Structures are given as structure tokens and as C-alpha cells.
Amino acid sequence: MMRHLLDIDDLAPAELATVLDLAECPAPRPVLAGRGAALIFEKPSNRTRNASEMAVVALGGHPIAIRGEEIGLGVRETPEDVVRVLGRYHAVVGARVDDHRVLEAMAATDAVPVVNLLSDLAHPSQAIADLLTLRQRWGTLAGHSLAWVGDGNNVARSLVLAAAMAGIEVRLASPPGYRLDPVVVDAARALGGTVVEADRPADAVAGADAVATDVWVSMGQEDQSSARIDAFAGYRVDAAMMREAAAGAVFLHCLPAHRGLEVDGEVIDGPASLVWEQAGNRMHALRGLFSWLLGERACA
Ligand code: CP
Ligand code: NVA
Image (cartoon, rainbow, N blue to C red; front, side, top):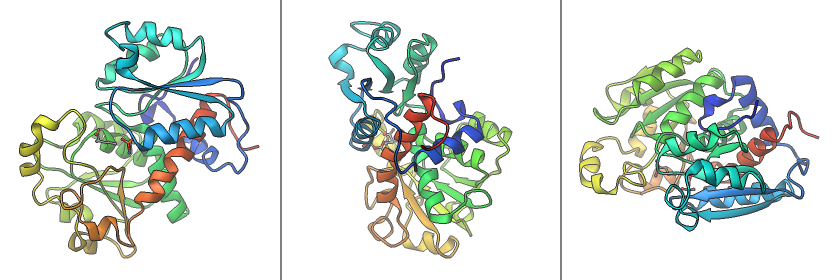
């Protein structure tokens, strides 16, 4: 059966652990030697485009980054036809899309493994990098706790599911109307995770080992900016909020960040911040993921 990664729970927990191990292989086998990876972007990207291209290079392959409008994804050709063709040239296709259903349509062809490089719904390659970052800091994942403060968005969804799969307790604090989809909370619990929904950020953060947030206005939501900025008042991660967390607690943000909105400069630029480690780990996570999709199960 061909495997795809549209969200993190397309992997079993043990498979996710293997991907994390592969992300740290000192000398990854060149499983993409002589092969290509097509990386489609319908939205802007700094980290994901560069990390995915360099991950492909590290595996000996040739990445081709493509803007959505360049190939007329869904306009000039259906997503299914696009990926059926790309599968004739490439060993893997990654795509950052406005609408998650485009990824589902691509994956349903089983023409080539499809990787979600961010959709409106999920950001699984970010979640792999985030777990890798936490594992490097803590040594282990199970038994730790993570507070998500802010929008119950695509990044939250994948991180909460990934945390549940890794045995990290999750505490959620989001304003009404911006909470994580209850279906995702149920899915995380069904994976064996502990998920606590808090009424106030301070309740979520109290004693947490990690505090994570993301932008209040995601790509494609620009027309909701002022309503969102109003709704998220009180959800900024600042030094006072970090003091409620456990001693030595870390701060996570997938970036790009807005200092003075969802996070204060003294937090993101301070000693608790792991944001640059997260950004760097995007490349290692994608390298581990691509090598897993190409059949690798252990380091050389
Ligand atoms: N974190 C992340 O996905 O960043 P980019 O949007 O720059 O790829
Ligand atoms: N939630 C953000 C993440 C960007 C990496 C967005 O979708 O724009």
C-alpha cells in the first residue's frame, strides 16, 4: 500500500518514532539518488520550501519547487492529473495548498507518495520538527506537558495529534470561536493522549514544560485580521505567562512570528525560545520523512 502524509496521524505512533530517529541519522542513505521531488506551493514559504529542497538534496535527489499558479493547479489541470504526471518524474510530491481536499485528491490517485507541506487543516512536517526539537531538549517525550495558547489552527491540529502520539499531555487555551475542532481533540484522546481544554491561558500554561503558539491570522485569513486580533487579546505569550509555566519551560513557534501580537519579543528572543532549533529541524524532519516514505526504517 502506498503511504502518504496528509496529517501526522497517517503515521502510527511507532512509525512517527522511526521518522524522528531517521531525522537524526548521521549519514543518511542517498535513497533519492537520481530521482526527483516535486514541491508545489500555492502559498508563500520560507522554511518549508528551503527545508524540503535541502532535505531532498541531502538524500541525493533533485528538488523542483513549483508555484501553484505556474502549473495551474486545479485550473489548467485537476490536482489528480497534475500528480499522475509528476509521479512519472518524481519519487515524491509535496504540496502546500489552500484547500486540504486538493491533497486528498492527489493522494487518492496513489500515483506517488504525497506529503502535506501545509494546508488549511494541518501542518504535519512542522509537528515532526517540533517533536524532534523537544526530544533533543528533553531526551524523551512521554510524560512531559505542552500548552497551546492561541488559534486552534492547522499547526495546533498536527502538533496536538503528534503530542498525543508521543505521550505528551496537551493543554489548550483558545478564545471561543477559535478552538481546536472537537473532532481533533477526540482523535488525540483516541490515540491515548491526555488533552485538557482550559478556560484561560494561565490555566493551560500552569506548570507546563512547553508553551507553543502560532500567528493569530493564518495565510488566507487576512480579511479577518481585525476581528482576530480583537478576539485574541489576552492570548499573547509574554514573560509573565512564561513564569506560570514549569521552571525551564521552553517556548515554541513555527514562524513566521509577529512580535507584540501572539508573542512578546522578550520571549521569542529570550532563553526559553527554541524557535531557531525548530526552524533548523524542519529540514531534518523532512529528510527523515522522505527517507521513511522511500522505505528506510533505520539509520545506515
Ligand atoms: N513554519 C513554516 O511552515 O514556515 P514557512 O511558511 O516559511 O514555510
Ligand atoms: N498557521 C500558519 C502557519 C504558517 C507556517 C498559516 O497557515 O499561515
